[in-house]
Amino acid sequence: MTSINDVFTGFKEKLTTLYDLHEVEALTLLSISEITGLSKAYIKAFPEKEITDEQSETLNNTLTRLQTGEPIQYIFGHTEFYGLPFKVDPSVLIPRPETEELVEWVLNTIGSSRIIINNVLDIGTGSGCIAITLKKHLPIAKVSAIDISAEALQIAQQNAELNKAQVNFIHADILDIHKSDIEIRKSEIIISNPPYVTLHDKTQMHTNVTDFEPHTALFVPEDDPLIFYKAIADYAINNLSANGFLFLEINENLGKETVELLTDKGFNNIELRKDMIGRDRMIRGTRI
Image (cartoon, rainbow, N blue to C red):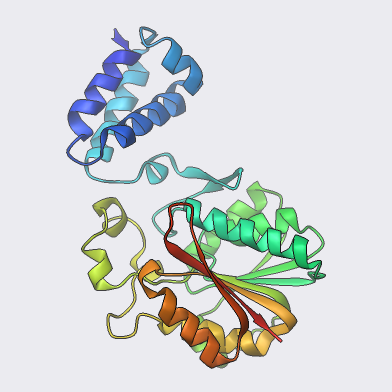
């Protein structure tokens, strides 16, 4: 029979070339909990606990996939964002903690400004994590979300149903939004986490991102890394309500350039904010 401790040993032997020890432990703990149904606290407290042969086989299969660099969220088909469950597959990006920080900033801004939020627009929604989370916290607001990927919108719709959140999902390309016949009400909040990874950035990224997550949601041309920010800013300056806010997640290496872009486009009260580990990762601007 295989014990929990045996599983930890096996994962450590096979995954340390891909991940640091802290990540290996986290992946092992999550895998055991997912497959056995045991709590993480129980797993840590009783490492001598034996698991069934079927569970052991499933864990071995999971380990084999992890060795390829495949993200564990895709292996199990779900993740958590801002305390809510979300389905994910390779058609959508895996939600990140810094995006949770962006959502937190939106909600804090609304609370402190006391602005009445009638309409919210999420540009490049992917899994729908931003739009759905905002709808859950702003139940009166009408939330719309656009994406170029029909496959992503299918996942986003499933996530909206999973979380009992009514969001209007729209198939559209922000780079060609002027050619679209879609009608979206002016919004008090426009938010986006668009593609911003350059080819240079790609060389420094883990293969579990570059080999598995959707490239259309990640990468931008090296010679025009702000291409999506230009399009979003042009759209937002014309479609935000008076005193409405634009929130963007950004490339940490292009904070100054993104601030200059929003300034040139006519936004006011622009604030560049760092994430929890001190990187320039988000921007807020206002349309007066």
